Image (tube, rainbow, N blue to C red; front, side):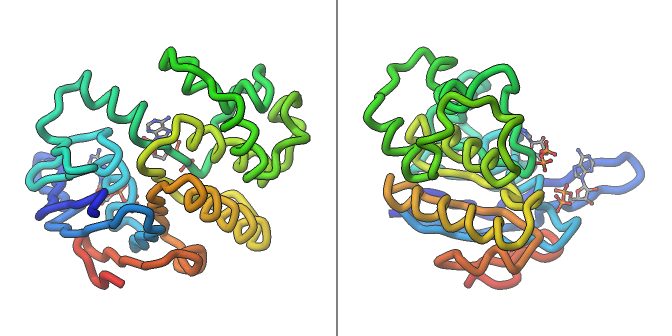
Length: 223
Ligand code: ADP
Ligand code: ADP
């Protein structure tokens, strides 16, 4: 079952005197439950691809299908709902709310969406990320690796179909990166989520089931 599919995906930025072809015909498919790493050469469209897959911006040409639905056919409101319910985002910066404790940060997306908090699932999720003991503490008392584990738990809390991680270990040392990515992988597997990590760093892609490479806005190697 294909969860993410792009068809001749293009994103051009018209700069007046010239056109920057950030993505120039990307065809990729990611299967349900897969952990795919997309390695993008620096300056080759990493942010642009993340924005396309996450429904944060619209393609110049081509299609992005997520769960069989064509994002280019969704209006603004539908895209907002899609992002909230179907996608969990993880960024290099943790973006935790400093005044909320760990548990409140993790459940925030559910609160914002007016959803019901499944306490049993929250316990399982926090356990999967090794955060049981950290429930009541404020984010700034945690190490970088711990903060990213909180951000990951927050991304998974709404049980999204896909988890999109943009350079998720970019601020961590290599041992911590490996540990955090291992936990993210195990959690996504446990909760049957499709995990897509977009990175400039080939090293962190090694834990993935499949590595796709993008160079000059095109697929150079589909793993
Ligand atoms: P990466 O994240 O891999 O550095 P980006 O997707 O940010 O790549 O950018 C790819 C190319 O598109 C770069 O040449 C960049 O300058 C250009 N680009 C990205 N966003 C914009 C924008 N909003 N307007 C104009 N050019 C952009
Ligand atoms: P980092 O420092 O982790 O790379 P940035 O804040 O620079 O994170 O964001 C990376 C990309 O993701 C940017 O292009 C930004 O537009 C986008 N982004 C960051 N945070 C969010 C968010 N909460 N929702 C949507 N897009 C975001």
